[in-house]
Image 1 (cartoon, rainbow, N blue to C red):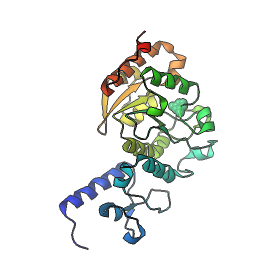
Image 2: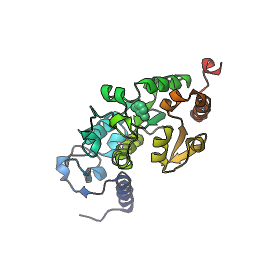
Image 3: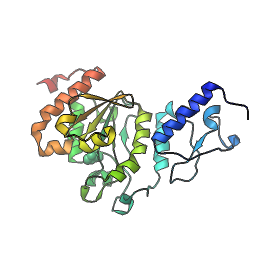
Length: 258
Ligand code: URA
């Protein structure tokens, strides 16, 4: 094989680093003729997910121009996941994520609860209704944003996810973020904030400012389930959401100003 030109070499090394960030270290060559009309560089690289079968991974270039296909691929890679203990602790289904695959705004919660486990969609229970209202107050709809969780399976009794569960599951969330490529992310609650930012601090210190998350602006605010228990914090949450709206160039809807 002829030596690679520097640009291709750099592109491959960036891509390998990207997969390493996702926790993927095993790469192998696949005969090019097995692949369809993918761009040359990508077509020569196939990636094995740690526990999945060696299925063909479409090129990232092709996928990033089609986020629907890319999200479908991520869902396929998750499969009927058995990577952590949650698969044998009563989860009914994997709760992948929902919303606009090209959303400018992404909300990330903690883990599915009973309602989400039942319906297969994040934030559809009581906390979900509050989140939907928060989104509406921003002048947006659920369909316009993208909503996901740090982990995709319901922990038994809604316990806080264990660190290894977050670490096992979050590479798929990283791929969802990379695919949707939102302008801003809102981490809902301490588990989401601490997992994404690797910072251990109380919510009161984490909220109210911007963070850089791999080149994307990330804000932290209270989890809607917490707001149901302590509605006094809604005022602070609204300040956080207004900070996000300003960043996205959204006007405060007249109703929300009252
Ligand atoms: N709480 C979460 O963090 N996520 C959901 O999907 C539902 C409740």
